[in-house]
Amino acid sequence: MGDEKTIYRERTHWPGWVNAIFWTAILGSSYPLLAGWDTDLDLGARVATVGSIVGVAVAVKLVLGGLTVLVQETRIFIHLGSAPLLRRNVPYADIEGLASVQYRPIREFGGWGIRGWGRRKAWTARGDRAVVLTLVGARELYIGSDRPQRLEERIRTAAADQFAA
Image (spheres, one colour):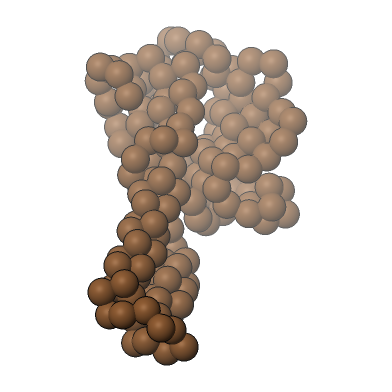
C-alpha cells in the first residue's frame, strides 16, 4: 500500500446473510466427512481434510470478504477482503468528478464484487449506495459504501484542488 498517509478508512463487510450462507455451506459440507459418513478415512485424515477445507474458506474470506477504501494523500486505494491482493489505485489526477448515488447493483452490474464492463466498473460488497467517480476518458467507477456522503466528503477534502469536481 506504500508509505502514503491514510486520511480516511472505510470498511464495508459482507452482509450477515452472506456470511451465514458461506459458513453454513463450509461447515455443512465438512460435518459428514468429520463424522465419518460414507468414508474409509481414519479420524486423523478426516480432521486434516476438514482443517484444509476450513483453511481454504478462511483464505477466500481474507481475499474476497468485504471492501476496504483508503482515502490517501494523492489517491484512493481500494481492495477486496482483508489482504489487499485484489486492489485498485485511483490517483486524484484521474478524477474529473464524483457524486454519492443510489444505484441498482444487480440490474446495472450483475451483482456485487468487482463488476462492470467497458467504461463502467464497480467495486462493491453490499447494498445499493456508492460514490461514483467520473474518470478521465469518460469512465465511471462505483465504489460501494454504507456512508457514501461521508466518503465523498473525505475524498473531496483530501483531493482539495487536485481535480475539478
